[in-house]
Amino acid sequence: MLGQRPPISLPRKSVHMNMQAHLAQLGIHTENPGVQIGSSSFSKGSEISSLSPADGKTIGATGICSASEYEQAITAATEAGKIWRTVPAPLRGEVVRLYGEALRKHKDALGALVSYEMGKSLQEGLGEVQEMIDICDFAVGLSRQLYGLTMHSERPSHRMYEQWHPLGVVGIISAFNFPVAVWNWNTALAWVCGNACIWKPSEKTPLTAVACQNIWNEVTADLDHVPPGLSCVVQGDYKVGELMTNDKRVALVSATGSIRMGKIVAQAVAARLGKSLLELGGNNAIIVEPDAELKMVVPGTVFGAVGTCGQRCTSTRRLIIHSSIYDKVVDAITSAYGQLRIGDPLDENNHVGPLIDKDAVGMYEKALEAVVEQGGKILVEGGVLTGAGYESGCYVKPAIAEATNDMAIVQNETFAPILYVMKYDTLDEAIAMQNGVVQGLSSAIMTTDLRSAELFLSAAGSDCGIANVNIGTSGAEIGGAFGGEKETGGGRESGSDAWKTYMRRQTNTINYGTELPLAQGIKFDF
Image (cartoon, rainbow, N blue to C red; front, side, top):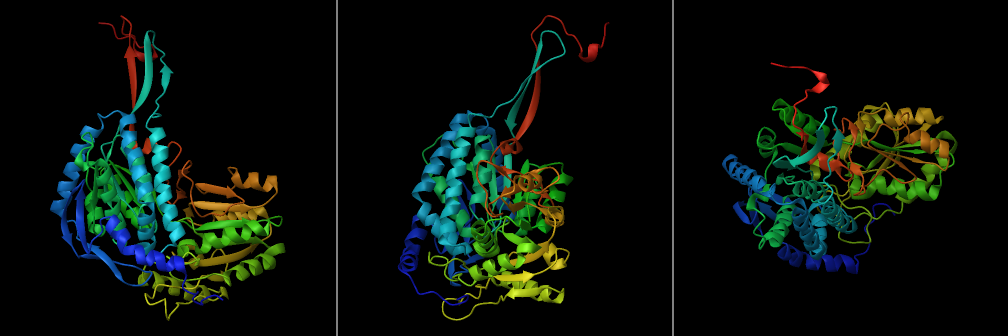
């Protein structure tokens, strides 16, 4: 039953027993550095404590990067960029390949740490490390495909082409919900494109960043052509992020987080005419057509809504159901919720782990209150779980509420497992509801009707950066460029031609003749 604690399993025991070994393997100590410039580290301390939402225990701590220490890091990164840009791209790709191999070696340990520090299930933690491995593989191939174009000139004995050059330094501000994958989405591409990277991880998940840097240091220890500042980590709160966003030496700031945070970053970077890549909030919906197959609707919706305890930017927030099948679908989803097992994320028998911290729990509770105040109806009760196994105070019950799309609480993203269900009568109405929010990240339609699917994917359909048919909203595949529209920020990471964001385009014209004709037939004789 929902809310009951499942029996302790052997996988749970074994992972917890191995956690200290995992931490030792990753080089995680009681106190860890707040600044890492390659293998050089300093500002060791306890200012940022990492508390596991799984059991409320302190895993370890890091220091905080000061303004002067940030200056050391950005200076090292700037110099590293100048060296790295001269290394041939395929050789840069080889270093990324070696990093991917090291991640394979450390997958179990790093995946367990992601799960323990962030609270997502062990399967999801391991899956996140697999995303890192996959993007490294993608980047290796990309290192030999940084293609430009050749164009015909209107002038005789001339040719034109374009090429792509490194930017210099890429700054990365990441969020707690995907503490390692999103960083590596950026770094793998940025490195093969010839850039140095400086990373400010979330202060809620500092140790996964230390671990990633330690693995990088292990790979590059004997590589003389890899400059120390190519990968830097600076720990801290928004003040460290401000140093990065206001720094003209950081050519591109890639920021993942809330819409509010993204607007602050965008304005700061734009003020200095820098480049920003923003991956912000989502308010993702699944449209369920009358001909949809329940065997696809139920798992796609449930995982989308409760996976990572609803803390994915691609989590399913809204389920828009045709009125003719509304009761049937809601009953099926409600039944599935009754079978969810909530508990320790390191126990592979559980479906749902904790929220990241008690602040997130408070936002979850306020959202449920707001639903009722604004006229919604709770179909599956939420609540905070207490008792044995839930001592951290971060475990909550996934909830389902009947709502309307125009409700204020529905319009705003709550980073928690709350699913809003609503009815529609026509597909045009459903698409309008799907699009009727400020976020534009992920969307899906469940249908076997070709016309409905194609309409949803057309220019008149979903306005999101991701639009799926017969799969849910949650997750991203490496091959496609990941990102959203509207207040999601418009950035693209990971796949396709997203690499162009990490480079600057240059157009070249070469005159191989003996005359100098001017463009547009202009005569300028003297």
